[in-house]
Length: 457
Image 1 (cartoon, helix red, strand yellow):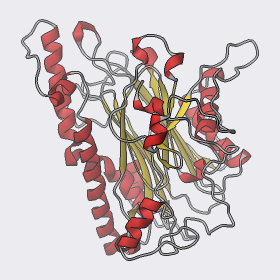
Image 2 (cartoon, one colour; image 1 turned 45 degrees about the horizontal axis):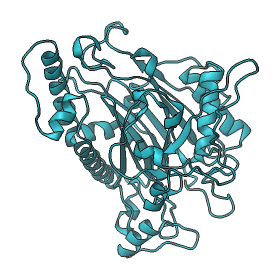
Image 3 (cartoon, helix red, strand yellow; image 1 turned 120 degrees about the horizontal axis):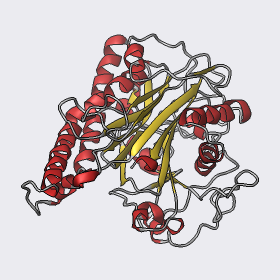
């Protein structure tokens, strides 16, 4: 049983987990015009054209891209392949598909930015799979969100992720040659053994992500000072290096994993291994007591998980149970650890839970006016190894999570994907339609779905 299995599913309150009453405080984003930025063109290059099927009126189209194992995608190079051929002792990686949809809600401007790049491996690193997706939720404008969407991945690569990808590719190539009768060496350090198995060093990857976030924020603050940008953005980003998934966030954007519980999957492939770090529930970090008590089934009323799976359409078998596991930690000024840092910096948290009485989140890129008052861009980073029990990831901004609970969103997406047979793109469109048209989300709303396609292994 992996560490993720030790956590009960996050609590849902009628599909509105984490929602803040509208009357409690003003909206997070000021009502300002949307600054223009040349970064739009750079971000759009990462998106592929897609149809508008099931897209609600007023919404923007989303991209849908997929990366298939070697030999299944015409023109695929070694650097961009989703897998190395499984035969001859070589490594095989799980294929992934991704899409996103967005809607401005009741706001006049759209300040969210979503990025999908499933061929994010450096050009000089053949034989390694690296994918990058992220959502950047702007407030006070869109400039910083666009800058972050354009440059976060390159910042993390330069901070050390590219070197780690190169080590994994080189070691994997050596292991493949050794297994097919070539020369090779056994043993080595723990990091070398991980690389030889197609697994990067999680410690090195986390350090690269943290440094990349720091460098990007430095760059954003310089640009804010030079151009007079007043805005900032929260972020949730995912890297898939080989079959290792790394999730990082600042602010209140979230990432949720849909995973089958261990007892519902037979065979040795069921043992998904969590790699380092505390796992987080929807409202914050899981305590040691929660991890220790994980074997006990959740008893709280209102939780969406059940033991029998979802009821499928009449005449069809019930869908397998998927458990929602929140991988990110919300960073809000009202939380004790965040408040302590803010007060240590000489600022304060107001009675309605806002830093200096003005902004709800306590970590973000940009926000130059608050950086000396305890605002931080240090991310929380989690990691896990993909197993056959892992179905998909849902990334979304706080507007979406204001009307959807984690388990609620996973159940909805599973019905669309499995019971109705919809594509990843169609499922994102349906999630946005439900959030905006049916559940009346007023905020900008963006959702991104990253699906693990085990059928192509």
